[in-house]
Length: 475
View 1 (tube, rainbow, N blue to C red):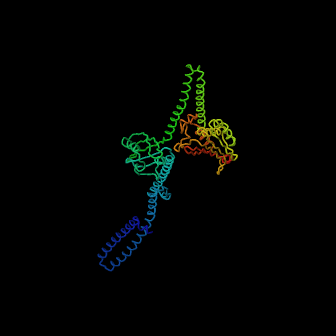
View 2: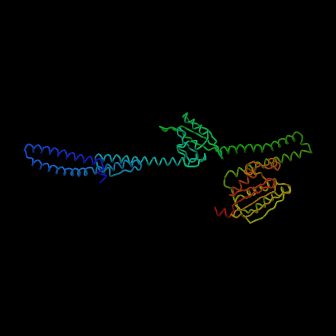
View 3: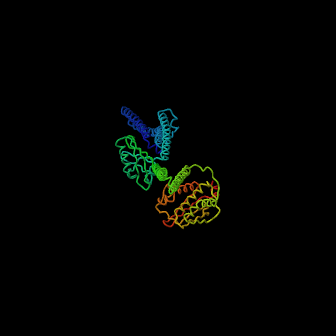
């Protein structure tokens, strides 16, 4: 009721009714006064005046009742319309009670309800579209950045923030220089804002990883403000693979050039008359044979690496014991060990079983043992041990007393064709692919390889592999 009295509509109804009563009473009082003056009866006039005042008071009370009766439903309906209009921005839900009548307010209520329904559909559609766009942008591998004409960030996704190593919430309305300090990126976006045309470029971000990004920026027109939007493609891995491919081709070419040149040279020498030289012809043929063997080893190792890197499932797997594989591998390298005067010690441990391609695992062991023998010193030792680690995995270690590996080369010895001592490697006939094959074989079996070395004192390679029982239970 208090809100009703405060309503302007009520006050207008009430004042209008009071005004009507007042005008009526004034007119009545004037007429009575005129009649009293003409009849000369003052007593009659005063009595009439009192009656008029009584009627006026009752008229005012009647005006109050009429004003309340007329304004109360009207105020209530207008308040409902007001509340609905205020809710349209936040929760546009229609109010069916507003359209119960067919008068002007009922028509207005119907229009507002219809607007609320349409607005609700638009809001729902915009919300769904916004959620879909945010999900797409958030899941994109490419980075997305939008800036205004003053190079302030208006939008960016997580891929862009990861690429520039930005920690914190999305930097909306922050200057771009506070997000990434790269002059080449600023130059690309500035050119887009100035020219209004598509600009492509390649930038390399400074930082520990030095990511390379390919940028495609285009103008973004959204009156009354303009800006630019840029898409970033991370090509770091692509560049790395391109370098690996280039290095691989160069290394293969180098590995093939030397033996091919030797074979061709000695073959030409024999054809030009050295074939009749009883003293040297056999030596020349031995050199040709050795270089042909080297070529065959390179081709064989390359084919093995290609198969291991193809990520295809092993064609056949079997369960075998570590002792059987070590025995077979030691038998293969024993002649080389005797020729170089290197002693091999084998410390037998638990009976361990592995699951995988046995011939590949034996090949990995042969490569490790060959390196331990060839890069050892005369009278040196190679110690082989196999046992079960505390975590249940098989642990196979190959330690030698050879020349060792410099600490700066430890991270690269598993790369293809990488050699610590190129002269020594060529002298012993290595291809530079042995340790790379070992790493791929062990990882294919679900294991890891660890290396420790001290220059001049020897190296230790440790293989960690899941036992056959654990692998089956996990599967």
